[in-house]
Image (cartoon, rainbow, N blue to C red; front, side, top):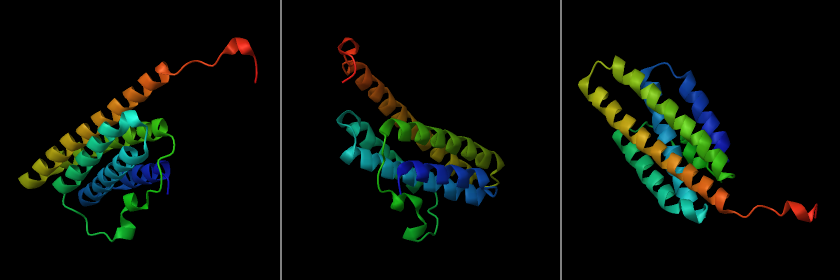
Length: 160
C-alpha cells in the first residue's frame, strides 16, 4: 500500500479514537509509519533526504519504544503494508500533518492521565512526535532547496 493511503488510514483511525488506550495505539501506529517511511526514503528517496530520513526512522522507532507496544499481529500494523512512498513532497506534507495531530492527541491523553507513569509516557511520546515532525520539516526544506536549484525550462524555445 502506498504511503499516502496509509497516512490517511492512520489519520482517520486517530481521529475516530476516543478511549486514551486506543489513542495511544494509534499514536504507536503513526510512529511506526513514520519509521517505515523514513527507512524507505533513506534507501530509495532523493539523496539529499537520506540522512534526515534515517534520523526520522530512528526517532519513529524510539517513539514506538516509549509507548506501550500494542498487542497487534504483523497484519494489523499498518506500516508493515508500506510498498512505496511516491511523491516525497506530498508524503512528507501529509506525514507532518499526521505527526502534528499525534502531538495534539497525546496532550489530551496526558491531561486526562490518572497515573503519573502514563503522563510521563505521553510527555516522552510528545517529544518524539515533535522531533519526528522536525525531521519531516527539514526534509521538506531540503526538497524546496533542490527545486530552486533545478534549472528552469527554456520558455523561449517554445513547445517541444
